[in-house]
Length: 228
View 1 (cartoon, rainbow, N blue to C red):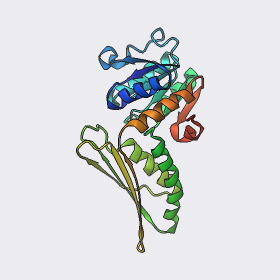
View 2 (cartoon, rainbow, N blue to C red; view 1 turned 90 degrees about the vertical axis):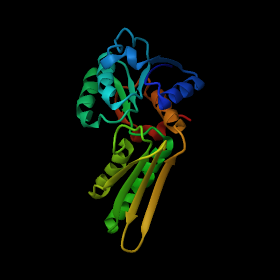
View 3 (cartoon, rainbow, N blue to C red; view 1 turned 45 degrees about the horizontal axis):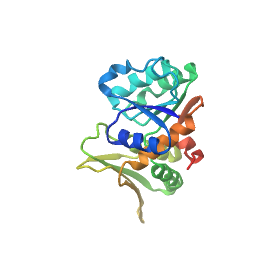
View 4 (tube, one colour; view 1 turned 180 degrees about the vertical axis):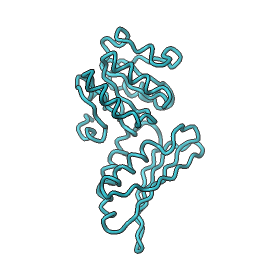
């Protein structure tokens, strides 16, 4: 499979290593050669199976628009663009391309989401939910996309939008904690990432799944279908 990778930072570099280890060809387009998505032309992306984006909230929308215009499939792990979701979905559907996004591509986090969907039943028994997310000081968005997705799980399950506390300290990769509180007890559920390898593995497997497909997908919908 031929992959174009946008964003060769800490996570992007691991995506390259993981993809190469799984037998894929990876080309990196550096930020400086791709201002406002200008490098993502139909000619440049000819023969590319999937474009993977791990850039920044400031760059991602231009990259999405250029990739969709070029007719290429795309996996997006960058957050901070979700207010444009209806626009992006419409673009993808009109172009007839494949698009897969996630607030977090970690397999562990997506298993965590499944646990949280079950735990959200507690809202019907008088519990209140609270979310705390902690990340490194370099993270640009707050709350994290993962915390927003967790909040959506509880909002859909019980109509309650939990408060989110965002903490930025040190080099924390990512920790998400949900507390379910009642007058009788407290239930605490936590996912703690030790490194970024889980994000990279999930993103590459997502790209493998998306190859040749059309449509607009969220990772939570399809991760159970991924190959090992």
